[in-house]
Image (cartoon, rainbow, N blue to C red; front, side, top):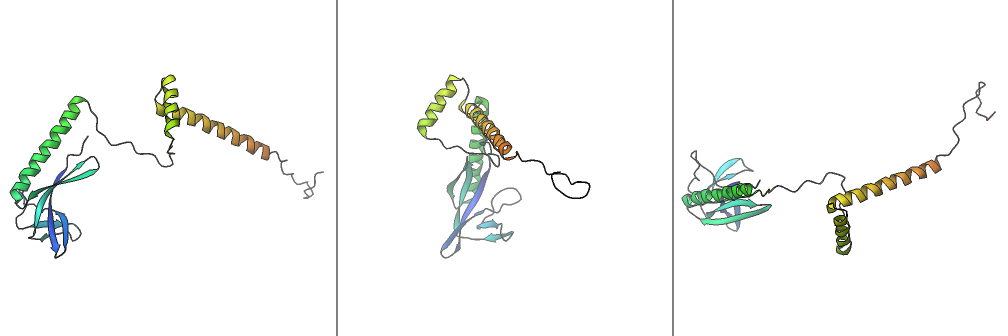
Length: 179
């Protein structure tokens, strides 16, 4: 599912040399307040910065997109509604066409990432196609075989090292001699 969040932002001149973006302060009916009112999250309060202009912010995947709409709060609200409808219609058309737009799966902690040269990757793809599996499935089976081989190799090494005689039990008289 795509991100449908659209926000009205006000780009304000906070000091003579500094411009900052803040979410526009809204009235109870959802319209932006006039006179440059913004919500400053750090201070948890509303502030007025009269010099500035409105922008619309939305996300295209991970990319943040801003569109400048001018100094009029009613134009900003109209543009906000238009952008919201555009995103909703795009999401509905993706759903209707069967296109699934989801986040890429998170890599679990401790997972190994393989970076293969292009030549090796091409040959791996050919082998995977010959075995009629996906590249990911084929790589997983190869890695599983190698891990199994490595763990079996590690067991034989520990067995070779572990051929020590068990410690002697103490004699009834308390000495540890081999008699």
